[in-house]
Length: 187
Image (cartoon, rainbow, N blue to C red):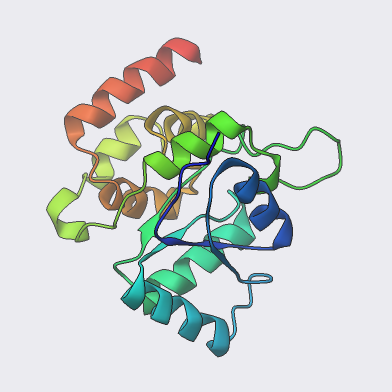
């Protein structure tokens, strides 16, 4: 059976991610080879965006977020795909989170639900609303954000990133309210 072809070039962190994606899709990748992306790689990504488009698909950890942020500064219209921390968890203890550990289903879902960042002002959720939901401060804020990220399929964020990620994914107050109801039920 032929694999589904993804036209855009997928930006990943390393060769293990490329290998894993090629097991699921017919795809071309650009590997950043770590969080310190050099000018040459950024130029490659810019050229790929101009010719075929790119989808940034990095690990749901600090390094992956750093790469994503660097790319967004240079190529703000790049598309993004996310895995939850749970979906990217390794089978072996001691290994780090990564795209290479995700199931076929998780990879398919992530790459079928890509998003292009919106202008933040168009979808701004008030900081007070996030405080009221216990997402920014409080004993369980981190766990709530992690569960919210899984529920909305926007990946894990720290408190500072949450507002931007909600805007990026065009999450409305109604969608946030619905998702938070489910998060509260499961806490």
